[in-house]
Length: 138
Image (cartoon, rainbow, N blue to C red; front, side):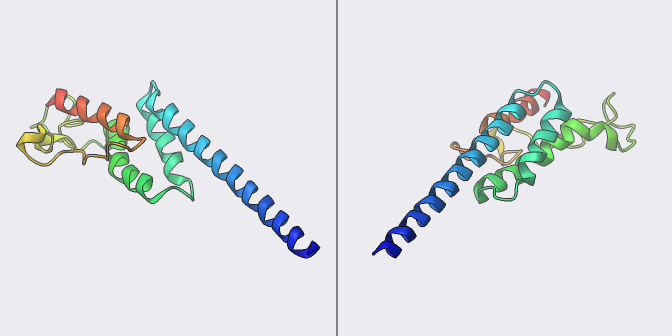
């Protein structure tokens, strides 16, 4: 009997430790998303979302949302560093129009760009921020 009780306590302790680890992980994820959403600087937002993407145990849905959002954030933050000389573009040398272009349009006129994230995604507010900026730019 004592052996079963000791085993039960060990299993309970392991479960509690795993739960605490999951709580810390969720707190870290939430903190990174909050910091990214409130970042003043585009490069800082991109860096924070990159840190989030680098976490090894991210939920598959969150990882997929990041895969859709990060290229847009990266282009907005670092696009000027990768400028292709194009004299047919706007004064910013195609910085924004190169990656926004004709892809961004109202939802009623075709596919949504950047690809929409689910309503429940914790990254949805950041997606809305970029979607709104792109629609205004167009």
